[in-house]
Figure 1 (tube, rainbow, N blue to C red):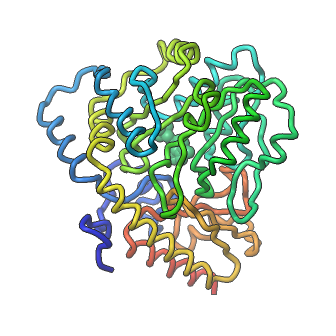
Figure 2: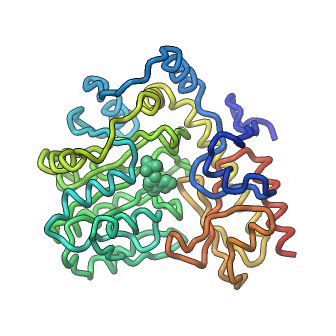
Length: 382
Ligand SMILES: Cc1ncc(COP(=O)(O)O)c(C=O)c1O
């Protein structure tokens, strides 16, 4: 297939022997890894060059944040989302999962529970217990094939003994982008129940439906801005997850101070490569990102067409992410993940996200790899 644009996303890069979690899981096995959420694309040339320049310097000591350069993040929110972020609202953290934990620990000292979506990226389930709190799961709905929190059910429930509500938008898995109306209802619920919402927006810049827009939670209302922690990173959209860098936007100074106090003695500094990659991505990477989104959109459409013809597997339409959510319940397999591994395709078990009827397929790879995987899936089902 011809490249869909001037960047070569069709190119297959051998990731063996690079300590890749995704590829090492099946090293020496003939299994195509379509599981953990990084893509197999080389980074944008501007990022490659910026990191090479940093490498060429040859000294990689402790790295500090350049406060005036926080303007890059502020400009990104302004340009991409038309929303205002003050440079001093930004806190740099080596990873989003660490920020989930910091938020829970700093804000839930007097509370036993943390609210979290019932079907979601596993760390939103596990970080509360790791901090001695009980994860209180919020019911989800698949209405119109959009996996999201069931807001009707949410509005009927008491927040009980919780101060923090974890949230994932775009939703992983499912790829749902919450609408403004949905976010306003969630914000109203948080206001009524005195909750602080922690919005994991790591997948925000991967937009598959051209008519859909991500709305950062901090732009939902003045209340949302003052009672939230919004987490962002270049890691998914620009495929730099291994460089361990992210940011939290915390407008409320009390919440920000509590959060940063909790970092002491636990969280190390960000590293020079992650920092360089993140700033470069946000400042100069948009052209590449748009091209990747076009490529992913075509991969998504290809998969939707393929699965439409496969009896027993239903792929949910998705608006964001490169992670297809596949309902395999009709196949009635004892161990769906093992079944497809035996067929030569490594998927994520839905069980980890709390819905064992599903498998998750990462389509952030060259089309030729996806085609090979689809041939194997079809062959396994005849
Ligand atoms: C929704 C979500 N949040 C967080 C992460 C991980 O973030 P980090 O590597 O920055 O801790 C992922 C990775 O797949 C994710 O999908």
